[in-house]
Image 1: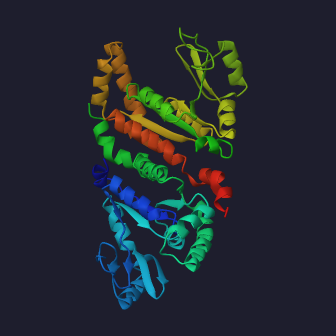
Image 2: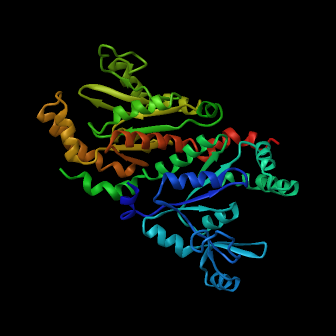
Image 3: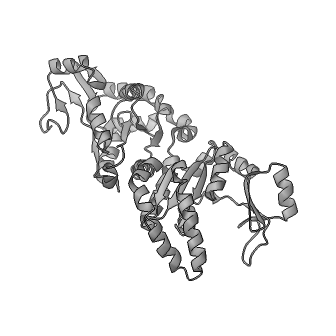
Length: 209
Length: 209
């Protein structure tokens, strides 16, 4: 259905935010598997690529100078500088995908999502939350990788981020992964049943007798 | 989840319309089985009950005089007279359900849906359409019950009704029943992930540490 849609209706931009540890990456990976015609939006970054990362797939890797020139040219609908590295979402990439009827999935933090809203881009925003900060703490502490300091920092950030949840269209509480995955899938499936999108595809065929 | 919601968030009114033969009854029955906490809104009617019909379950059966008094009292958010019988939806029933956090499913024609919109009631409207009028004709002619005249009338009505599809939030093309059922289910599942509804349930639990 969606591939047919692609030729005749604007694509949808799905923006997903979540506190670290809420399960966003797992859920988004699952969603991309469920909808092969939904692609992950690739951000630009000035940080060096890590082993295994592919340019144009994981990120568009550019130099800091190039990134700054793109900022000056207004190329980014949202961008941030984190630990001396730039990260940004290209407006052109989003516009081209929408015009081509391509649905895009954009994993982004709450500040980035707010910039997208302010830019007036039509989007479907989804916030993924843990059932509670207590549960999030358990999950973060379960990660061997994170020090106590990092866990404390992530919990503090989570508190701030969860306060922004009400500005999202949808809110998925990742209590059990299976249920959360089903809800995320339903949001995309329902979005594809929105009248304008379906009409763009079906109106002509309807009145055939 | 929804039963928990019921105690703390307003219920949602799902309004479903479809041309005769599009599969609305089958799809709505399936939806009610998938969501036991979703109930069918029971209309009032002045027509006599048929064998097997139960008062308060299939309809609220009242006399024509009683129905007319209710009209004068403004009891109906929408009503119609069909073949000397009245049919109507009670505003009080809808308000009570919403206040109780009860989700209601209302099967209604396009004129009734328009009256509900004009009444300013918050609702999620879903139009179910056949893939084409040609296919609808095949389905209607497949019904032994309907005469050629009835089929012709239903097709003429379908043409008019399908022109109203764009005023609905969602549009499901019943090409294959399984796919249409999945889409209808997704619309309800997604609606239950709307931020205000989820926040009403989770906000307190979130900040527990």
